[in-house]
Image (cartoon, protein in one colour):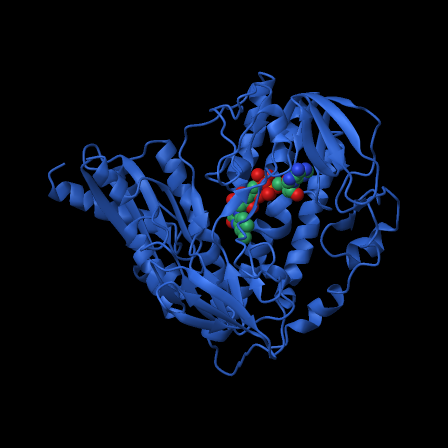
Length: 527
Ligand SMILES: Cc1cc2nc3c(=O)[nH]c(=O)nc-3n(C[C@H](O)[C@H](O)[C@H](O)COP(=O)(O)OP(=O)(O)OC[C@H]3O[C@@H](n4cnc5c(N)ncnc54)[C@H](O)[C@@H]3O)c2cc1C
């Protein structure tokens, strides 16, 4: 299959790309057609080099200073600006959007969509159509949509910052006092210092990079560099079977790579319902992914050659070899060189900051939100935390930090998603329960999709039949979960869900099947 064609011309670097942040104008049309991520022209044809707002005032005092313009910082800034506050955001990267837009969420999900497309072409064979992946292919070849999506997302982010007059300053921000932040320019500009009544730390996280792992961004990769590999390897060792490790392992396996995964724990994703993990593991192994538990790397070496080989010796004596290695063992908060010692804030061993339920640090006017405070470290929760911190700081109306259950999705192939209690958690709490299951194999839409392994599982209290948790592995799990979320919110019972009519044929109908099973079980128990 010749996938390279379309993407090839777009892969050329933009003529404007090397330009430093300047706020200069250039013809928007050419720019948006040629540019790679971060360089685009807004509808008003104003150039945002690196997605930064072009105008800067000479103000030195603000109501709010936000450090970092990922999803957490961006939402905090816009929330404050909407409330009429004067806001400055400091961003050290050449783009706004952080991991969400540029090197995490959106790019990995876009590659996943390409992998699903390739997978459906190569696995679900149609008579007379033969597809295979061409020899020399790069990840970028699969990322054509990513450039379009990232550019559009950057456009939206910049337009929003612009619309609300948020002042975006490029540079590395560092506290020089409880209300003062220095901005170190990254490209030869002049250093500045600004002050703020409220400061929000939203500096995010970076992959953990131990010194004994020879990262080179070509063969030994982390989750920030994996999508920039010059050539798609044929085999991959993934160290770390957390959410990101499993997502990339399954995506690359779907693209035809031989994948080996090694994890220190004795089971995959221990926070998930065991039954769901068992299905996930079976499906990953069916794709040819070898999974080793209770092990870690001893040495990692890159042996020159064409192509070079990465050799990984593990503590338990495995001798693994592949064309590339992806190291995915945790992320650390971006708190080094933030001047935290100056203001008496001490991050923990992983660089994470402690906050109270309103996202305040030990200084009432300094908030921390997003990945830099750790779990759950999601784009969705980071955005909510950014908004909530500002609502608290200025006593604005709106929902405060919620105790509501959060949905969680893993964009592996197949997808996994859940909300509420796992079976283990309900057992541990000593609550009598019944489980209802809807199998994709028994669902016509599942059959049509060729997904006959998927499973939707719901847990209900035996006493009264109230829903406690929903767990899904299979197609569209990350979308389907929100039906369960609505029911959890409304404290629905098995009987109510069983009586709901769904479109036919749909995967949503799995809820009715699972609830019917639970109702039958409740009846059997005389409840
Ligand atoms: C591969 C991958 C896939 C993911 N997939 C998902 C997913 O599917 N769904 C989901 O919800 N989440 C996902 N995430 C997590 C999500 O991307 C993060 O939780 C989210 O981006 C965190 O937002 P943030 O604003 O806290 O930090 P970041 O997005 O990390 O942004 C922090 C920003 O601060 C800047 N910065 C740091 N230090 C300074 C400084 N001193 N001065 C100025 N600027 C600074 C950085 O340059 C960066 O732009 C994924 C992450 C990865 C890595």
